Length: 238
Image (cartoon, rainbow, N blue to C red):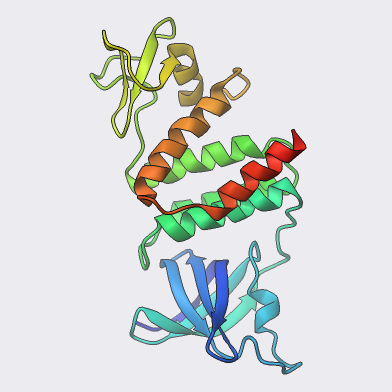
């Protein structure tokens, strides 16, 4: 189905397609993730403006033509200056893009997620705590996709007791079991994540561990290249 009217969008990824075109993966407000062909985007013509705009973190408005899943980019307009992400924060932005690229199905709208994504990019421009922004985005994304676990109660529906120690049961949640197994987490850390109290020591790390486990389960063996690069860069800085 063609999209004759412009819709807000961000570019998640591009790669060469045929001789002069680009295959574009975009995250749009009204249609979710879409795949488009940007014809002539790699041509040598000085009049070609498409490639300059087909970059990550650039707020755009786009429309397209076609009836198949792979449609043709029709119109491409800038909606402002790109978000300026540098260093680690740039890698964090690329990680967000790869999450959306690999976890979202095509043509499935997520209007609120689009707004959260844009707000996260805005905050990343000046954040000195990008890891917190990543954890909050992951938690929101997993909830949006229906994979979130309950951080406020155990698998039996009982509220988390901050004085107890819990087992994390993959794809289910937290439980107090007589036979401890797997990842063990203190109740106060679980409560801290539930309440987004990131100043609580260890809360960011445990959210990362649990989120990673859920995301890896959804990916089913697919790797996140941006996550690997981000981890390597952080290790070198440490």
